Image (tube, rainbow, N blue to C red):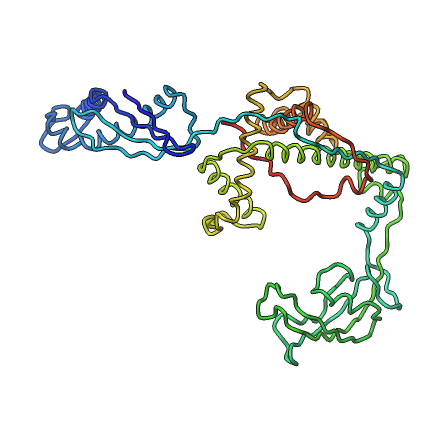
Length: 445
C-alpha cells in the first residue's frame, strides 16, 4: 500500500492511497468462490455453476463490497502510518476500479490541531470569599415560609403586592373586544408578573366588589403580533382579595423538609448546611468559570469544522429538549448560525482541556470521585442508597469521573495562576453569573 499526504489548507489533509491489485482481486476471488459453493442458478446443480457465470452475475457487487471494506481498513492503516489524528470522518473519492489494476482513492479530512499550552501564570482569578451568617439563615427561613404560603384569609382592605385576587376582566382595543383578552374568573397574585406590564400595578389598592378600568399597552415584542404595541383597556371586576398566610415555624413545617425532631435549632442547622453547600458550589463554579475563560483567552486554537458541526447538532438537540420538543422535530430547521459561536467556544475549550489532561497525565482521583458521590448523596434522605447506586452504575460513575477530572484541570491551572480573594456577602456569592464560559465540550481526542 502506498500513501502520500498533502496539507491543503489549515487543518485539512488529503491522503492519496494506492492499494495493490492483488489485495483487491484476491479478496474478490475468495468471495466469488464462496458464492459459487452456495449459489442456486437455474440450469445448474448447486456447487456446479461455472466460475465465468458467477463472475458475470456476482463479480461487480462482490468487488464493490470488497472496495468498501478495503477503503475502511486501509484508511485507518494509513493515518496510523502517517501519525495523523483525524477529527471526523473523511470524504472519500475512489477512482475507477478495474480488474488487475491497482486501486487508488483520495481521502480528505481535518486533523486535530497541535496545541502548545500557554503560561498559566498569565491567568488572573478573583475568588469570592463569603460566609453564611445568622441573618442569612433568618432570611432563608422567611423565604421558605413564603414559598409555602397559603391563601385562605379574605381581607376588606385594598389589595397590595403579594395578595391573591379573584377577578374577571374584559379587554378591548379601540372599543372592540379582542380574542384572548377576557376571563370570567381567574386567580392573580399581584407582583407575580403573570400579566402584561401595567396590568397588575393598575389593580393595587382595589377592594373586593370593586370594578376598575385599566389602560395598558402591549409590549412591542408581544408574541401575538396583532396585539404588539397596541393600547388596550381592561375592565376588571374583583370578587375577592385574599392575603397570603405564612406557615408557623413548627414541627409540622420542619417535617416537610425532612427534619423530624430537634425543633427550630435542628431545622436551622439543616438549612445552614444546605446554604453552605450552595455557597461552596457557587464559589467553586465562579473560580472554574474564570479558569475556563482564562484558558480560552490564553490559547488561540484552530478548530476543526467537523467538531464544530457535531457540537452544533448537540446544541440543537439540547435546545429542542429544553423547550419540550419531540423526537420528530427536524433539527435542521434550527439555523446552524444560532449555535455557531457557542459551539466554537465549547470545542476550543474542550481541545485545550484535553491537552492539559494529556500533557499533565491527569487521571480522575478515586478518592475525589468517592467524595463527590457522597457529597451529592448528602442532599437525599437515604444517602447510602444513592452512594451504592452510583458505585454500581458504571455509566453514572464515569460522568462523575469526568467532572472530577475537570476539577483537577482547574486545580492544575490554579497552581500557577494569579489568585486573589474578594470578600462578599452570601447573596452576592450565590447570585447567578452572566454566561461567560461554555464547558461540556468533549475532551477526548
